[in-house]
Length: 141
Image (cartoon, rainbow, N blue to C red; front, side):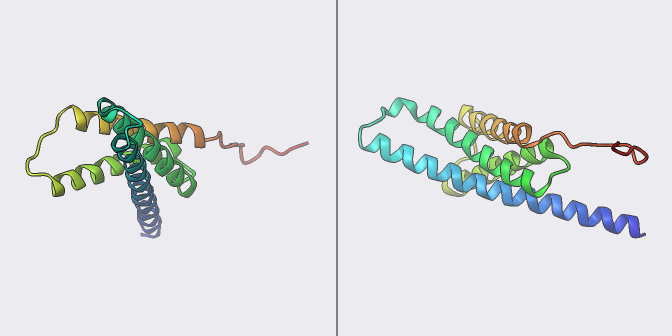
């Protein structure tokens, strides 16, 4: 019974890390989108680059959120980063559903999913340094 309690606590920590990383990723993505919208409205960027701005926002958000998740969940960095990217995508999808009239998963949703997962995966690869695993009987000489 004690072993299952430890596993349950570990699952709660992993879930909390992924949710916090996803929330940070959503915040970073929204700030990048806000800056992109300001650049388009001021004439600095053309309106044709909105898909690229969305992809950039999702990648940067996934990268920041995945890095936070990797800091909180050191044992599994790549799955942690991907989980943060997935949570970010689900939050972006939920915000889009709440603000929109219809439900359609088109090219925009595919770009968001790919951007969030790539950013989270990149954070998992970059933050996931090799852990030194020594045998229990081995000692330094």
